[in-house]
Length: 70
Image 1 (tube, one colour):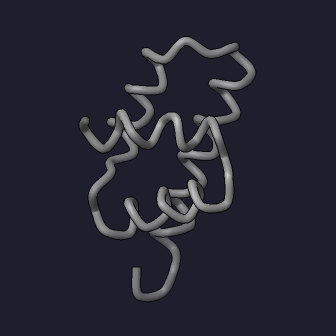
Image 2: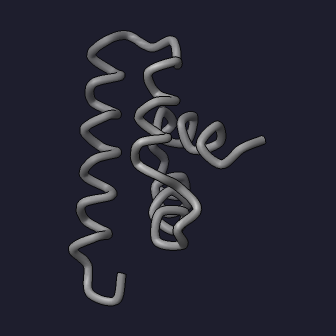
């Protein structure tokens, strides 16, 4: 399984342990924002859920890029 395939369900679940795994994957350079957004686009979700998750993905990458020692 490719990392982006793993992260999309973790975004959908949204549990604290999933959120931490996502953040560590981003910090570790294992995930790419463009790849996650592309994968999200091929995932069957309600439009409002997909839009919310796309916002969360962009936010997560933005937070990590702005964080000291990122």
